[in-house]
Length: 263
Image (spheres, rainbow, N blue to C red):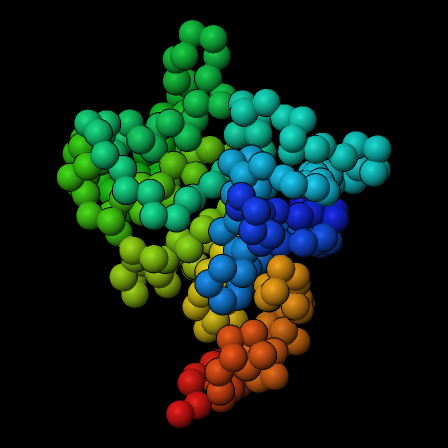
């Protein structure tokens, strides 16, 4: 599966956020969207997920081993069709209400339910596996509103997993996670990429996590893609200093760039 952005422009009201963006995201890779606040990272995630209306251009999916005639336009998909292809972990989604942790995670199976709405044995197994993976067993029957922000974030990640889509979008997924779960999240994403060949896109701020765990970096600035490539190519001193308008120093550790402020 490829995700293809062609001449894509996005705005909020009269403010242009991204202009004439062209890029191809490949499956089997973790892609990091990086850039200063307001550079369009979250806007792009929302547009790909179908939440944000496109000003101009197109967002398409191309299944592997298909020709260009088989392009699937995001705009042409029904909500159910889109939900079978793209799962999203949104930013700053504090969940209220009386639904239990298990109920919220089970919602990830909704796109696959029959007209009767009954869960299959596969659905139940997928939900329980996700609950265990994200160490949520003790909260399984707890109302979601009782959980902390970090615990709720793990529930949203579990819900996205059971949705079982070829494309996974994450918008600042480590915001409410402590150091343990930040590292475990990226280790899991690496594992899932290697075993399922998913296309994973993460909007994030942490340059070092991006350098260590992601395959491709997309740097955004001034409504454009400033640079893209692997971390060695993209997370250079010159690029980062220009993007964030600050002095930095870089150390190389096991082929990965480690970025620190240069006071």
